[in-house]
Image 1 (cartoon, helix red, strand yellow):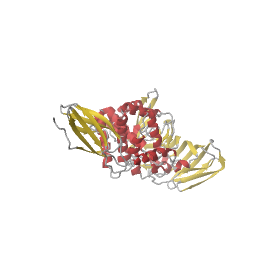
Image 2 (spheres, helix red, strand yellow):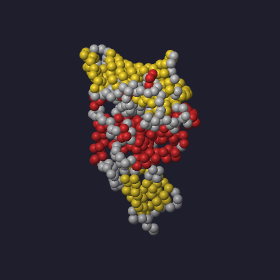
Image 3 (tube, one colour):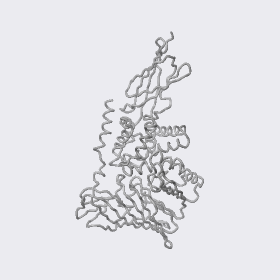
Image 4 (cartoon, helix red, strand yellow):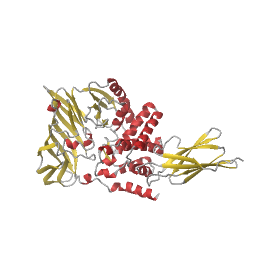
Length: 548
């Protein structure tokens, strides 16, 4: 218990003191990006990756300011010119340094305009092939095709003005303000109403793209357009199924959480260059080719709340995105197909974690300063499956009524909507919503690497007409953590009846005793497998019932 308590203090109290270096250096807040790009030549052979862009950045000084530093790949971007107030600039080491000759005063807003060229190189974020052009930024790809402050904590409005051939359909974040056609050219103008992080900026476009649109009326009566961009030859019946269930899905999550938080919803299937199954870009989700899969759609759509409206503060908090979206995928399955289907789904997530060869904590504070390899950051067994399993165990621990009320409070919290949250802040918020001191729960499951290994004992004895059931809880774990959890125990009696008892196991060799007036014959620990992540061995002690 002493070691456990020390770990809890380190995790919870550090919220006030550990700040990512990138945030410590941030003296400005970007308010809006306005990007004008000429993509006209990218859709024809030889399908170059080069384009010219003009980016206007409006920012506010958080302190007296003499310099701003933007992320800008030295490999793929060439800065041609910058317009603004008296300054000098330097582009090196993937950073654009802009030095102001006159101090910009705190709280004042300024604009700079950057003229740049994207080189004809493959950079892993800006993709061009056979008449298709798209972007994929997560986690730090935006800096490869536009100068920006490429950190999830910096959320800004985004406006795109793009020039393409007239036979190209181009989708992006927000609403389509205009698409003016002039001879063989079309000029798209997309604009967001809500701020977003750079990793959620997206462009999806193609020659002869197909597009369908439906309208959904939100709970507050607002008409929300939903766009479906798709490729010729895809499974049209699967697409039609997704279009048909989309209103129900939007209604379900809006009622479960808060009303749909954005001005548009949309999906775009891409090509084989897209390495993910899906990517939750704000208001325009990217999908792999022909991936009109209901479970995938539910996962990515739920990100509009978990990740887009309330965004992780640093990449150490990525489980708040992916764990919640994986869990929400299960909730959609429960809504559609019932509790049994949900239980099967969530047990599969637990099994995915057990199969993981490389086990590490869900919450990794060191990722604040240095993002790990993408296969670690987006590790399916830990960040997705284990985190979803932990959320189900939180649901069990709190009970449905308290848990879902807290989830609704979380997504309706005006102090969080369209902003950012850290893991420590989330824990404090959830404890406040529930009125429960559950820091112990988050500490063990987020900071722990493995899971409890129970070696439990029970005995059944008789004294006169009373039957005594003694339960002893022990753990022999692979780490120096004792996992505290509420525990259900089922007592089976000789007459065929049974009873469930609830206990709270919080220490090793903890004993619980129950007395009955009829004969117990069997004890089942956690009969419904509510503690998903565990190994359990149960042994009956030798002293058994002695008949009179």
